[in-house]
Length: 205
Image 1 (cartoon, one colour):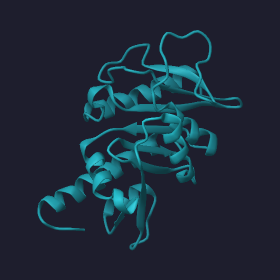
Image 2 (cartoon, rainbow, N blue to C red; image 1 turned 120 degrees about the horizontal axis):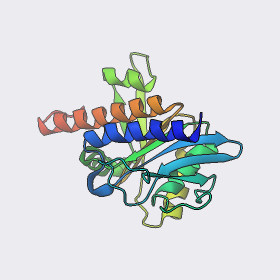
Image 3 (cartoon, rainbow, N blue to C red; image 1 turned 180 degrees about the horizontal axis):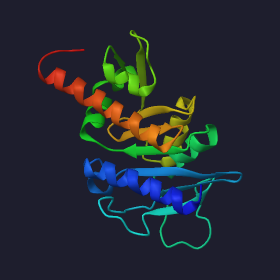
Image 4 (cartoon, rainbow, N blue to C red; image 1 turned 90 degrees about the horizontal axis):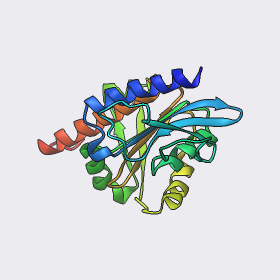
């Protein structure tokens, strides 16, 4: 797929997630694989207002997250997280968003280092079809130094699809295709919202 086609594919995902208000204060970033040999990808340019679409929304980077050629923008601060995903898997899309729900969930379950879900129908959207399926999302600490954060994130990347919560920061979700990554992100955010609403009602799942 061409660079332009990939750009448009990522822009459409950005537009949809922005409409849900999942990028408060210019937070969050998205990435999509452009080529495998050499590995190159598009990633959100730093500081962009993701509610708007401009030609400068994404930058083209190499396997290490470095700009390719002359470009005006600079890669998002969390580009190294996407670098780890694309270098360790065959995933084609990686999405990182900061929402109130994923921040609260990460804080509530930080002591155990993971949040566990079972018994919810939406789990099927994650590819788990067994009636007693269990989904575990690891939680890592929010290191201000991005290389340190990336190093803590990397051991949790085991397959072409997955998710990691960063305590009081956000979630990074990746998938085999852009559509799959978006679907997984939607499912995880549903689970977070559902769990918090139960807690608000005094019910603990």
